[in-house]
Amino acid sequence: MEEKPMAAGYSADGYLIDQDCFSAVRYRTMPVSWNGCGPIALCNLHRALGQEVSLPEVCRELEGLHRVNMPGPTSMRAMRLYLAKHLPACREVQGREEALSAAAASDAGIFRYWEGREPHFISYMRTPEGTFRFFNVADGLEDCRMSMEQFGEEHLRGGYVAVFCSDF
Image (tube, rainbow, N blue to C red; front, side, top):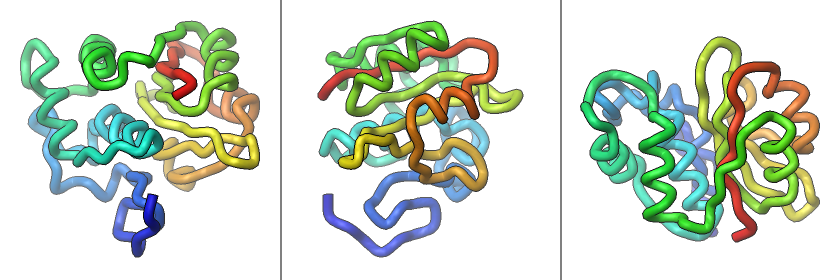
């Protein structure tokens, strides 16, 4: 992918890294800055796979996959339906240890877990050095690199964990 000048919320290479910067885009009747981790994770996974999609486009499609368009996060049902349509090679793995193992063996994917007290989706991709690059994890960790083991130790500390991943 071509490197671009960094705009607010984007990495220099075009990944969406800071959810707080996307308040102008609406998703499920609210600003993406409040509840848009799902669409952001999907946009970044598409980009990691060399596919360009826009955040508003992904938001519109995901909204249509919810039974009711009301405030709230991306449901697992909507995420599964979207991935089945656009990235059918993704497989879902549930459970902390199982998800970490599957993610460590993959090239890219999306985690669903609890970041602090909030349910959260984040995307990741393998780097050429063999570590992983994580996007939109938390304030101060908008675009970070670490091992999958380190990510698990620091962020998968309890609650529901799943990963959607594949060797693309």
